[in-house]
Image 1 (cartoon, rainbow, N blue to C red):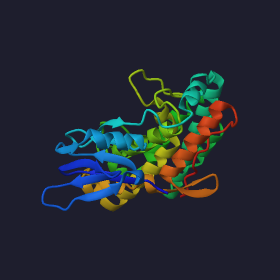
Image 2: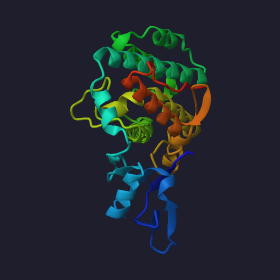
Image 3: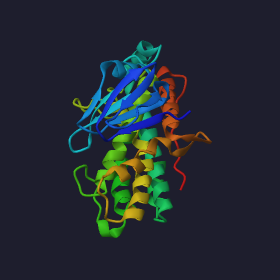
Image 4: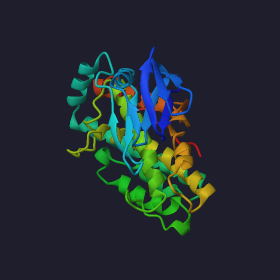
Length: 298
């Protein structure tokens, strides 16, 4: 079952009663949502009040809670610290993972990402053979830096020419849409990692000492093209009018529910991410050699 994503963009008082999330707003009837049905909660207003009791229940049910700042951009995330019965064992296996294993896992991750980027370009009817060649020749640890070569080719061809698009976090639209979509994806991946008993901080490639979600940033890479595909469709519909208001946020909030193809089966993206993180656990414990990633279908 796909978990629900709750997005709060207006003043609200959030509390809990009878294992339900209780939403109370001025001059509106109260609304209840079963906590067990929730996967991600986004708090995007400075006048939202949330009780400690509700926070505790959300985290106990492995709900990722994302808070936004005054400019409506995600600023922080809370996750369950006790998400799996074998967490200490999985932590040890993750910590003991050899350098060659991590390099092989990163090789698989980069190849999967580039193949999905190639499929996004195919959806746009853009030439993608160069990306397919890169994906087939990624070496251990991506020592040839194929990820960067692919990105340079990909971003130049993804969006219409009138954007003269350059991917930069602080750049003009549609960078704002990509940033927001990636923040949602990152929360989904971090939630799945904790649910699988892994530590999101310790990556297989990313190592920034100031980044608490290095492993999430690793594992989300092959899923980024799904965000890109959604943003591309938004650009087709809205052209240059890409202010990140409630309407466009609502479209981006559908990302966790996207249908993706993984291991020959169609699955909601949020569920597919959980299958990916479960396969990563098996790689760390030595019972499996490949991470299970989805394949983007044009």
